Length: 181
Image (cartoon, rainbow, N blue to C red; front, side, top):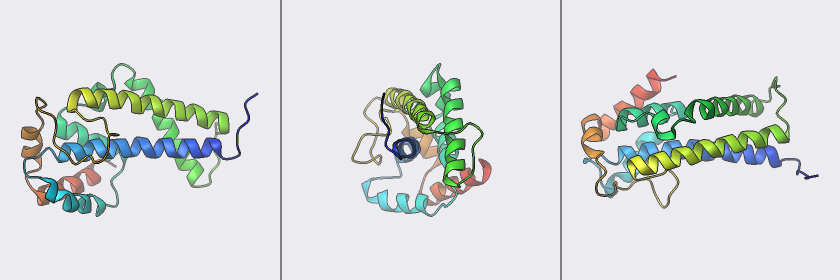
């Protein structure tokens, strides 16, 4: 029988959700950087603009990706989107309860938390594949999401129309935060 450490489930669960949220944020910032208005010298100001927004979360990045690219996350993930999204939503609900010290109705023991981890990894894998094929970036590659798309991937016209400069980016973030909660 497999033995678990006391915190293995919570640790893996927490890190998996953080990676999923980071992946979504990195795909979003990658798309923003496709605006012809931005170059490497603008990275700090773009990071600062995003950092100034205290109410930008996973669902905001998801909506922003769809708006900037014209491609819905469901399309990027493919035919497993609906099932994976439900599992991800369940994991996020469990996370919110666990992190706030509340009881959960489905008793999130180590085995249940590791099942959530498996589902989160499936979501990330499918999103990475779809984003790589569509945008040329999977949300994980290092060193930075602030790079231009490979030749042949046309994103800059659409993004530039929506975000033509830093003030337009700041306004876009404010609107996302206000409209998508």
